[in-house]
Length: 381
Ligand SMILES: *Cc1c(COP(=O)(O)O)cnc(C)c1O
Image (tube, rainbow, N blue to C red):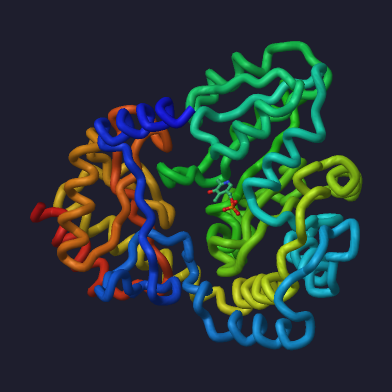
């Protein structure tokens, strides 16, 4: 076993595909500190700048005083606290759905939904660029799984022609490595023609898209109920940790009863649920954060355009600069780091071969000067 692993690692190193962790000495913010050096951070998913917001820290501290640090058990045993329960109620109310269910992570939420609700009579039809957790969840169940070319409605239509009991179209709302948005109105038109249902993973849309931050459906002026299964994470725009699934009561109760990644895991600490509640409250009370983010995205795109950077067609906070080879992406990322700018290179297998890229993420807390520095630095490399 060990020599096999050594060989795999050697191959990975040879392909410029080794991944390394950075160890932060500061909180998650637009400016971070790593190994005694300061960087402007363009790699977090903290889109609304809430991860180190004092209101979330206060809520965490208050909850720690009351509940301590650990939840001590799974939700179905004795780990489900009032903080968890209120958070679920607040999420359901915010989205206008019957119920919401908290999961310990987005990966576990997607895995739990797909692995527990479908059987061999069913069909899952997934976008090629869906998040790894959706693909793994689909692989773990008995349903047949087909993929369609990214955001390609002709390709989706071909996959929907199969005659089966339940057809579930599964898509990211905002694609995590490309930043483009799924064409939900067109997907819904197909789903109605072919009697399919829809699951949306809105990890990068919730809190950010739509006038009130309800995400990708609101972005298109659609009601939330058009997504039969709606999933989003709490560790990105919300500034906390965990994830939830929202929809009809029958969906949620089925997950409580059958989703193994819900049942057999420890609940997130109550204090983390409290931080999530504070983040959700700020998403509702401070819409100016979304406006600030929008302004930053527009400013970045304008400057990048002027410098002719190879951007992908994205209007969201995720702005990839396509560089092609792993070597090139890593080299540019390293030169940026020398200039005090942190932009992580994303390489295969996270993205397709020869599409290595810088994945720039903007937040509402970036200042104009940060963005100017970034674009200037990339264009001179
Ligand atoms: C981050 C992410 C997840 C996983 O969520 P975690 O809470 O980090 O496990 C799922 N889907 C998408 C699209 C994501 O970007």
